[in-house]
Length: 422
Image 1: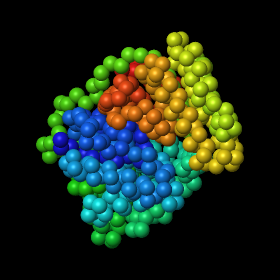
Image 2: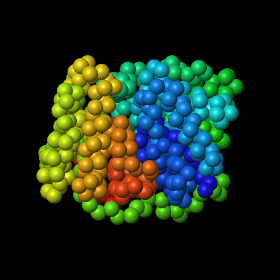
Image 3: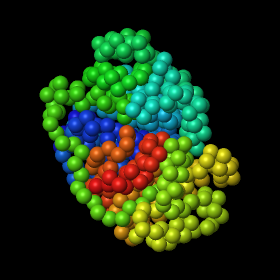
């Protein structure tokens, strides 16, 4: 097998977001959770996305996992590589975006890449290096309250520079608006100045297409899924990708449905509230789990009584003050680990009971669920909302999965997703 684009994502829902973008641009795409073993059959595809749970890992661990994924993708013949992270640049002062990007550059013997998390379709834009969520600066958007990666600085140049050993430059929106040739010239000038990274402004999809075209000769690109919009056309212009490929076909997966939500983002909180208006719900509480209450068993028993009447909602989503209170009592990592472990047990129990369509909200929750279910990979299908497609499993239990980043989706996303399940 030889693929055109090899991608590494730092969480599971982010990987699916990227894969969704590539499929919509006509690239058949499969996603694996970690590098596939020698016994795994890789379907025919132009792009492969390897999803990791490395966003909040210790830096050395994130680098090691990313390099292992890169090695597999190189072995599969990938011509270009993409390191995908969240459109809200989720990270800490230590990383992991900068250190992983620099490790990948070194492994590829390259000296320059871009960083562009913009996703205008979902309200993420960059202007003069500052990241906006809708009309708010990142640091005022609610992301400052994120339980694992609070984003308190909206300047991506400052955020990335704090994580990197090499200098960070900026290609601002005036240059991007001037077109691909000017963007490419700006890359060349920054390289001559010794800059290894360039934050690139983007205010629209047209900007992203120009940026993508300017990246045709870069071995490594880093960013959110939006900047991948322009990459498939580079391969088409080179005669390597057909224009008439049907990329989003999925097999039918009949069965019961359920929703599991571990995200505490503002978008997911609104989605939980919307579903509660028409469907029963059960809330997990990290303090009760820490006290020894077997809420996973309790939630499963509760869900069994609801399944025949429609999809139930099991959630750990909570308001920022409640999340902080639990973290103050338990520690940030322990509170998250308790919820992930409970969600993993619940997902396993639901599938054993006949659930075949699962909507999962939150990157960490999605990671815990697919790992518990033994899912090695997924085929990417049609989009539900920007950044979130339906997928079906490759091997393992035959399931339809919608893995949603906490920040994505319209208010009625959960029921909308289940209504259009394959």
